[in-house]
Amino acid sequence: MTLTLSVVGCGYLGATHAACMSSLGFTVIGVDTDPEKVALLQSGKLPFYEPGLDTLLEQEMKTGRLSFTTDFSAVKDADVHFVCVGTPQSKDGLAADLTYVKSAVAAIAPHLKDGSLVVGKSTVPVGTAQALRAELSKIAPQADLAWNPEFLREGFAVEDTLTPNRLVVGVANDRAEEILKEVYEPVIALGTPWIRADLPTSELVKVAANSFLATKISFINAMAEVCEAAGGDVTVLAKAIGYDPRIGSRFLQAGIGFGGGCLPKDIRAFMARAEELGAKQALEFLREIDAINLRARQRVIDVVRGELSQDLTKYKIAVLGATFKPDSDDVRDSPALDIAVQLHAAGAKVVIHDPQGIEPARKRFPNLDYAPVVNDAIKDADLILHLTEWKEYRQIDPAAISSIVKSKIIIDGRNMLDRTLWRNAGWKFHALGRTD
Ligand code: UDX
Image 1: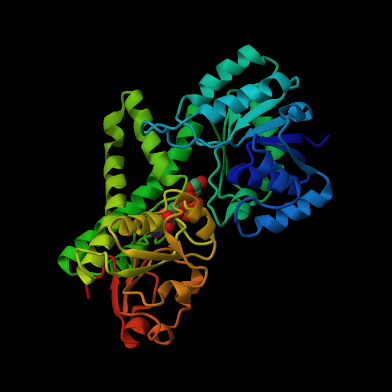
Image 2: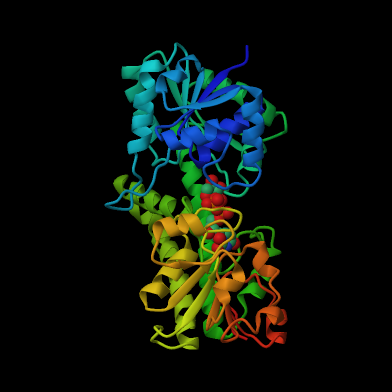
C-alpha cells in the first residue's frame, strides 16, 4: 500500500517537498498555521517565486493527491510526517530559534497513528533530534522520530528535491530507515547515494555543508581583498585555482558575498551550538568567515564614496538587484539590499530595481525607492551598482543607456558583467577584487 505523507510547515521547503512528494505518487497533506498561505497553496498558487514549482504545484493539485489545511488533526492518516518549519536566528543572539520546530511536533503529536514516523527536515542545532525523540517517546510513544536534512538551493528547489546529489537520513533504528527508503524509493532508483547516519551526525551534515560553502565564498572574497591591495585580478585567480579538481571552480565567484535564509544564520547557529558543547575553538574560523562576508558590503560602499564623495546626499545611486541571488524573490539577509539600505541611510537617493524582489524588499524597507523598469531606476543616476546577477542585467547595452544616466560609472558587485563592453561604451567600470 502506498504511504500517506504529511508536511508540517508549508514555506519554501515544505511547499516544495509536498509538491515533489505528490509528484512521486504519494497522497500528501500539507499543514501550516498561516491561513493565507494555506488558501493560496490550496488554490494551486505559490506564495513565493521559485522557477518550475508553480507549474508542478498546479499539476499536482489537479491529481487530487495533494491538499493543504490549517487543521493539524488532518495528519491523522499519514504514515510519515515531514517537519519543514523554519529555524530563524533568535532575536537575542546567534543561536537558532527552535520555537516552530517544537510547536510543530507538539501540534501533531496527539494525532500520530500507531507506527508513524516523524521526520525532521529543518536545519537544527546538533542534539535537537535526540531531545525531540525523547520528548515524543513520552507524549506519543506509538511514533518514532528521524532526521532527514535537505540541501535544496533556491532557484533549483524542484531539481534538488527530486534529483538530489545525496540523501542523508539520521535514524535510531532499522525500521525508521526502511520507512524512509520506501518514501525515497524512486529517487534512490536514480542512483542517488544513500547515507544512513545517527541523529546527531545527520544534523551536523547540513551545517557542515553550509559552513564549507560559506567558507569557500569568503575564501575567494578574502583573495579579492588581497588582489585589490596587490594589484591582482581575483577572477583570473579563481579560474586558475578552480582547475585543480581538489579545489573545484564552483562557489568561487567573488563579489558582495553570501546572504539568504540559510548560510548566514546557519554558520552563526553552528558557532553558538559549538560553544554550548565546549567546542567553541573548533569553529572560531567561522567568525572570520562571517566578518569577511560582511566586509565585502563595506568595500562596495567605500568604492562608491571614492567615486562620488564622502557626503552622498546629493547623489542618485541606481541599485540593480535586491534579492540575495538571482531566480529568487528572497531578500532575507540580502547583501544587495543591505548595501542599498546603508547608502540610503548615508543620505544618497537610492532607487532599486529587481525582477522579482521589489515587493518583498518594499515590505521590509518601505522608505526606499523602487522602479519596476531598469531604465527608470537608472535615469539621471550618478552611479549604477550591479548587486544581484540576474540574467537581464547582462543583456543591458551600455551604449544604449549612456544618455539616460548622469554619469557613466558602474560597480559590478558580482563580477558578472562584460567589462570590455562597458568600457568600450565609455563607462568607468569597477569590480571587486580587480584593480585594472
Ligand atoms: C544554500 C545551500 O547551497 C543549500 O545547499 C542549502 O540547502 C541552503 O543554503 P541557497 O541559500 O539557496 O542555498 O543559496 P546558494 O546558491 O548556496 O547561495 C548562497 C549565497 O552565496 C548567495 O547570496 C550567492 O549570491 C552567494 N554566492 C554563491 C557567492 O557570493 N559566490 C559564489 O561563488 C556562490
